[in-house]
Amino acid sequence: MIRRVVVLAAVVAVSFAALGFWSVRSQQKPDSLLILNATLADGTGDPLRKANVRIALGHIVGIGELQPEKDEPTLDAKGLVLAPGFIDIHNHSTDELLKDPLAETQIAQGITSLIVGADGDSPWPLIQWIRQEEMNHPALNVGVLAGHATIRQRVMINDFKRVATPSEIRQMEQLLSQAMNQQALGLSSGLEYEVGSYSSTDELVALAKVAAAQSGFYMTHIRDEGDGAFAALNEEIAIGERAHIPVQHSHIKLDTLAVQGKAAEYIKIIEAARKRGVDFLADCYPYDAWHSNLKVVVPDKQYENPRSIEKALASVGGASHITITQFVPNKSYEGHSLAEIAKSNGLTPADMYIRIVREGDADNTEAIIICQSMIESDIQAFYQQPWVMVASDGGIASGHPRGAGTFPRVLGTYVREKHWLTLPEAIRKMTSLPAQRLGWKERGIIREGASADLVLFDPATVMDHSTYRDPAALPTGIEKVFVNGVLVWDGGKPTGARPGFVIGRQGAVLEILD
Ligand SMILES: [Zn+2]
Image (cartoon, rainbow, N blue to C red):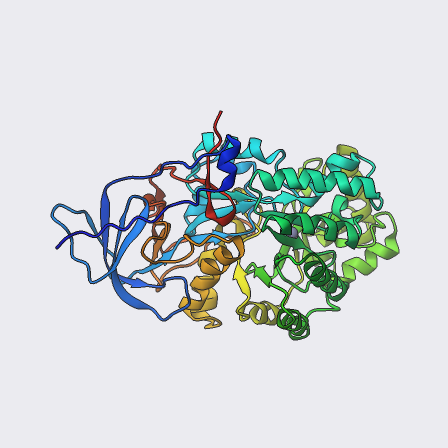
């Protein structure tokens, strides 16, 4: 039998190569490997099927009843599911990946590509981060979004607590255009956070138009995920429609008592927008608690007003639902709920809140919290929508279990135990759906010619083990992970290989030339 090696163009030779600082990186590794007896979940959502899969030169080069060539290495995958590598579109490993390029907690979950720059906050300038990542040789692929707050603060410096002037918006447009030229995948915003929260809808539309002109998408942590979640959703949809840009709704949730249980109503608004032609997708992490800073709890920013604070605490179910996970000025708070800390200090929860905010402000840091305020029926309803994908909102060294547990948790708990999703559909939400949003045609799918980013896992045992007390505990059941055809995770540990690329729009592999 003649071995048919099909190697499609790995990367698109994009026009920016002509600019001189990019080129296409050669990534080929000649040896082939035949994976035998695998159960394929190919990323499309189609039913599972048995097949042998050959990889070579960083790509999938054959699928079917293939037999080993003479001396060809093989891998028996009997009982295991072979899926495309998971793509995490919302990951906060920007800085940590530079320190920890092996990214053990990420590849251990089967993540083979992660996107940073979420929530409006991105590295800057992008080209410098891309260069650092290239020299850093990460174990998995990375991509980056341009952050709205990052750009806004470069223009407005510390005078950002107001609506921007037309000339400031023009400067922001120029900076974003620069970032798009440096292969930002799109624009991200974090409108619940300080810098982004003062922007007008018009400012966001103007910037989204710049990203749209270069085939980018708009990914947003909307203004309010609680009492004002419906108004914030309507603003997001309006931005998508006015700027003609695909929208990626970050970590979809309803996180105050006033909106809990209203997922069906929320979904209806999104379905209507999709029917009108808005390219709206969302992502969701599989936990009922969010992770952010203490100020976010009080949406009217009245951090010294006990009445505002009491109302805000009640809206999330009370001070017992808030746990401080990190607080540099006073480590003794860490691991305790706001209710406990208030009690041991003899203060009301609102007064304790004020004290912690003041201590943080004096130290120029913020208290990081976990707040349990979502309900399972909403999470289930979101997960069961075909336009909702899996993303972690976590990353390396996350203080929330989602950082090390998201993908195995969906497979173990939502697929195997609760039957919310079929296995092929869950895999689609981890692979081809994010790839579709990113415009990456060669990843997130098992087919001939696609990049060999692959995960082999045991569907009977795959499970997360990270908890709020031990957020970095590794999952089990993820047996092998390949990135660009190279084995990076094998039987419970990293192999040490670091074959990841920096990937831009249309899946282009980026390299900066000096
Ligand atoms: Zn966010």
